[in-house]
Each structure stands twice: as C-alpha cells, then as structure tokens.
Image 1 (tube, rainbow, N blue to C red):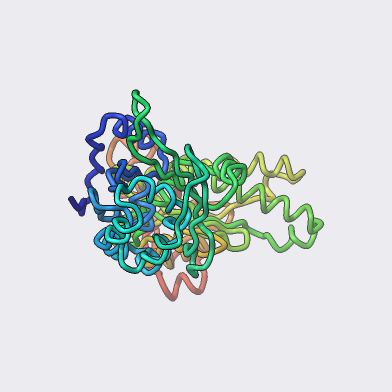
Image 2 (cartoon, one colour):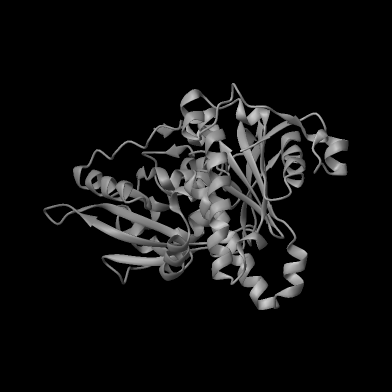
Length: 401
C-alpha cells in the first residue's frame, strides 16, 4: 500500500504497534515503525511533513520491506530523494544485525529482500551486541547534503507476552536537546507554526506593517555603542512581541526598522488580518514608552513611524539558509507600504484606504474606527510626503489610525 495523499497515516494493524504509534503521533515525534519482518507499517505525520521540507507530506511505501527496492525508490521521489539511498545504507549498516536476526532465511534471504544496491551492506553484517535499543547518526542531510543532520534511536517493541512486535525508529535533528530546548523556550511556538505555514511560497492576501524609528542618527551619536545596541535589542524584541501577539509574521529587521505581515489565511479573514495589523502598530507605539524608560530616555525621543497597507496578491514565503529563517513578501504593495511609512513623520501611524476598507463593522468598532466616515488624504498631498512617495505612490489614500 502506498500512501500518496495528504491524509494521516493509518495506524498499524498490530495492537501493540498501534498503541506505540498513537503515543508517538500525539507527542509530535518524528518516528517510523516496522513490524517484526521490517515492513514499514507507520510514520508519524510530523516526520512525513519534515521529509517534504515542511511543504507537503511525502508519499509512503506502507507494507513494503524498509530496505527493499520499491521502498527505496519511493523515498528517492521525496524532496530529499537524492540522498535517500545513502540514508538507507547508513541506517542498514547500523541496524543490520537486528534486520538479519529478524530474517528467518539469514543472509541469503535478506540479500533478496533489500535493494540490490544495499547487498554489500548485508554481506558485511554480523551479530547484534544490543538487544533493546541502539542509536546512530544519519549523514547526508543539511543544505549541502554533507552534514550529520539527523540522529536516530531504534527501540525494540514487544507485546504483552514478550514476543517481538517490531521496531520503532525515533529521529531528531542532530542537536543536543538542551540546544533545542533553548530555541523553543526563547521562541513563540505558535509563531513558528505560522512561519512553517508559508514554507511553500505563494500568493496570499495580507496586511503589511512597516515601522521605523525617527531621528535615530542623533541617538546613535549621543549614546555609547553599548547603550545604543541595548536600545536596538529592546526595540526589536518589543516589535516582534507586538507582531506575534497580534497573530502576525515578523519579517526582516533593517537598521531600526521592522516589517511584519498579517495573513488572512492565518487570522481567519481579510478583516481580521487588517485589524491585527492596526492592533500591532498601536501596541508597538505604546511599548516604546517602556523601552524609553528602560533605556533612560525621554518618551518623545523614541518616535516610531508606521505605514500600514493591504496587499491582495502579495507573494509571501519563507527563505531558509544555514544562518536564519526569514519571512518575506514581494509585490507593489510592499514598496508602497514603505513609502507610506516614510511619510508618517512625527510618530504617526498612517494606514491606506485599501487596508481600512477591509475592516468589517465588528472589527472596526473594536478599533474605534468607522470606515464609512473616514476622510483620506492622498500620500502626495501630505506636507510630510517624501520625494519617493510623490514619485512612486502619490495617489495612495491614507488616514491616521
């Protein structure tokens, strides 16, 4: 049986293995289960998604020998396919004694069961010196395919009578749990989930928020380098927290500025996304008072400019490198949002007509706004309009929020 769709993996028929599968699934583990003859009977949905590079769940060769030719060919169709043969060789080399012990016909039968390209591994296998569990490292992952990006722990599973039911293979990133725990503790798990939701880039309606600190150059000159760095760190943390609390996605940080996106698909509707963008801007403006106090500055020394805009066809996605994961968006509205923000001098929060008119009556009332009575000004007509705004987006209608 080949599981090809995005439906959840069915539980194994064996009740002991099914019980194990439920526990692993509910705990969110990456795990695979083979029966006593090393036929793949289960893979957690979290692992299927991971093999699909967080974009889609991979197809699964259920019921086939874990190291068989058809199973290996199926895995080679995954996004990580080019390295899957090497992965199979690595895992078989480290677990071959168990696989051999579970094959009644010994070396001869196992040679016929595995992919022909793995037969040399079978020939070199010997007796097992571990009876309950074994750990190893899977090479071939990472951005260049050369790093030991995954580690695994294989655990034998026995039924209530003590008979072998199968083997569980638990996988995790090749990082100590203390490091993973540190990253999880410092980050917001719901925000990470939202970041994964745009791993596959695509067109998504969203509100976009630009915010930047006014008159940062005089502050940078007046404060010591250490003090200015601490200020920047406090502002960045405050900005990200306000965006996350509102259900948005943090984008890039450039200098003293921040970009954020509020996706309709994440927040439930276009109105909810527009409202979340406005709430985040207001929350960040209020948070600057605390940042100023902690930085021993006057409140009026930390004026933030805000530009809020709506993008009906923004192309939003995730960019991952060896050093960071970043959410970004492309579209005319992104550039227009930056122009709106640059015109919001004096600590203003300017929102476009396109964004305000996305609000339904309930969300607008909660924000103390009435879209039917708002008066707008063309960006090019503002006394604070920049040359770029007059050149690139003079007709965009904005109001203060």
